[in-house]
Length: 220
Length: 269
Image 1: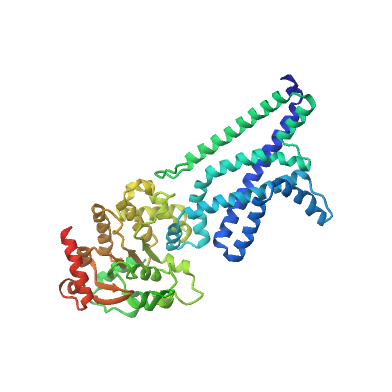
Image 2: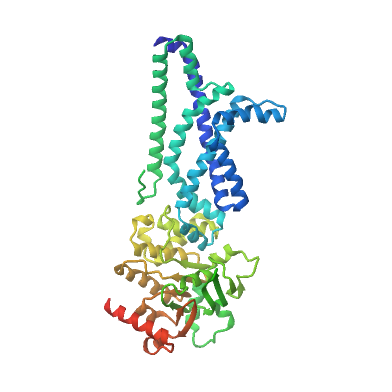
């Protein structure tokens, strides 16, 4: 296994890229997803139609195509170049937002209409009702789905290779190609993925337990 | 404010004649129409300072819809609603401000699940009245004391019984000293053994001169506290009388039949 020590820098760089893109994508995706969900529910027909197109595009096309569009097509139109890593961050955020919007909207709708009526009845504006009453409950419900989103993003960062950004899987592929030690390289990579994802899922479970509303059990 | 004024009024009642300004809430020719269904039909009503009026009638007769129209939680199709002489139904009225002055208690309680009893009561004080944290807390605790729930201040709704939850619901409605409290069947979703504590709370409020419009079928309670009872059927007021008349000799045939049925049921219980 000592050949892995030789390539440690390469692997670590790939791993950091994966973590960076995933973290950034999930967090920015969460913020955008909340806005998209609110827009879809309360924004009226035009806003919600635009949002639906957005979501359909990012859910309905392969992430590789999305990376191509944002790396080649759009910069071409403006005769400019964008750093591929920045494109990666952007596309993963926009993509994750499309999925997270679905989870958040579902959770907001599960926090029944009656919570909104009660919030309005005490004099809160609709915006304040969303902020103080609906979102705090909906976001708690969304945590398990959010963990899944994290898993799936972590694994799909390897698509970044098409625009020349090397993530963890791509780094492993390079090493395996250079050393012909497929078994060791991929086993090692898989174990690291497993540890990392298990750790994040564990954190998500702990957070979920911690912020759970006392007395209300949600089976997951 | 309103409740203090209510107390003052009690001392002077009988010597001072009620003036027009004593009217807290009024609606004129209020209607609510959903497509072809007329839920509320041309209802006019006045509630004076410190008065308690009680609406009763068959289920599906539009009582809840009417109450929600008064609270501006549903937009009336026609007619006007006035709160202390200010018209709430004309355009350009800040409805959030208006709703802040009207307390509402729901049949199914609808506490905010993610907040403690204290948090539920405090929310409007902090975010609507924008009181400083300390003052909001004190007032919220005061409201919880009034419904005898101060011991449960740090419990979440799901950790409370139905009756306790509804008392918190009442505290939530009265904490910001609204001009009037509207109560939509506050006891009908509770187990029979839990209605008593809620009725006791309402009786306390009545003694303090709180202006209230209550939809309820708790007849002994109605007889005790209501200044006037309103029989509602098919979206309209059929008959308005002091409680004694309803219990002895209602004028309308429909009220007679309904009262007979209610009294029979109450006796059985």
